[in-house]
Length: 140
Image (tube, rainbow, N blue to C red; front, side):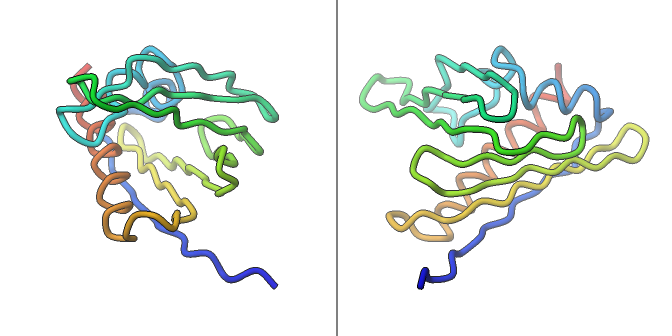
């Protein structure tokens, strides 16, 4: 019997209409601008075939060139401007939900924790990325 997996939830309220939020969250050119947890990291490459059964891959790298890794997975569900789900390459599941009230959009991410880093570290990292998304989307 499989043990119950810990699910971490992070969220952000973005002062922008849902159409813009959805576009910025799913378009590779935008993803490369906000997908980092700290200023010393960046996403130099992002590929996203945004269809059920298709893949995404984002290369996340230290700006000093000391380390990089690919974060990827396969989409399992997509409901335009409402929700999408995916399975990461390591088998963990995640989902992202969007809700809107006029020009304010709430983004909620839920993902299964991995076993290497602490729950607190994972939550802080994913929240930092989501905060960068908010800042980028509200600025540009």
